[in-house]
Image (cartoon, rainbow, N blue to C red; front, side, top):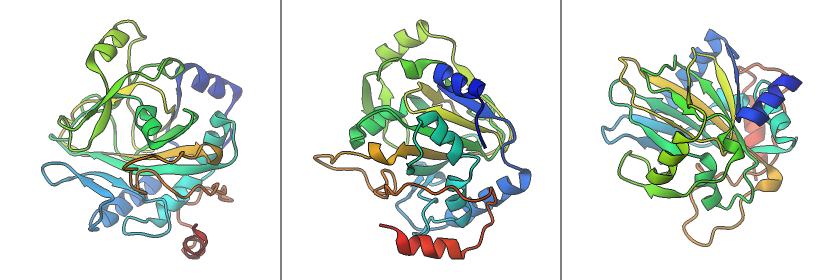
Length: 278
């Protein structure tokens, strides 16, 4: 898939661009079935809510490990995702900084406070905020079910002061400090709800200010994320307590575009990829 000049301009201006029905119902069903399968694994790459339900599944894009999925391995490399990411980052040599799949369970799926992804990633040693993430909606996302909110154009502003919140949610988060985000939202364009049906995809910049609310609906809501980073922008060494590989990948080898968009390719490719992995 090749972005138009208009889409590139929209990404540069707003910090995100969306694609309606980028994946078919059958493809979404495949990805969700894979999450059900790998979600049964006993792995530190699966983060759980305080209730015990799954919150996040990491590292489904690699060919090995308990959360590995052939479909997600291909998803990271499909021309529908990788090619647009190469365009907006103006770099053909990209790797997956991390792959994560977030679920907001019905009724009790909790918030993600206002933050910038680079607010986390700068602490992981990433030199520059030249990164982008593809979100693929696996379920319908509405304000009722805790959709994301983006502040358009906020990626062109500063990296805001943040603190490590370890109280609000079951996963530590670098959230923008309340006085800073309160003032910023009062003086910025109105945040927009990122709603859509299964198969909708959104490519967004790592500095865009975003957050999401509780899922108050009776339905679970899955989102899949592929965070792309140029191999040349790989993390510098972190002096103390670097985050684990499933959050901050050490596999910096540039991804090869698959020859087609098939998420059901031959399993032999994964065996070869596992053998070649650094």
